[in-house]
Length: 150
Image (tube, rainbow, N blue to C red):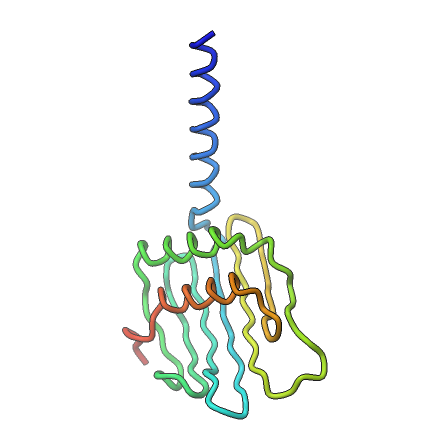
């Protein structure tokens, strides 16, 4: 009886551990893009895309440190941390749009995440859940503003 119980416990443990590591793996189809739109004030506006090799293409539009077209390369550690941040936030559980019609001068953020044959696009403008805002800001911090080359 004890052997069967231990076998079940070990099986469940390894199944959970293995499935979680697959979910947080940087897949062959990985890509992430974030686009922030301007407002009438000093809201940061930029477009950023990251591919599975950690190549970042960045276009700073307004109210950001780097204005213009830039690129840089993330380490594998940074890339894995980005995937972990997104997966831990349960990105696929979020709605596809957070907005209110008729509200002017509010910047938006569109996030498109592709990994392991799944894609999620989220438009964020109004009534954005705090967890989604934190996830997006965490990813932006992991990418950082430094190290870009023209």
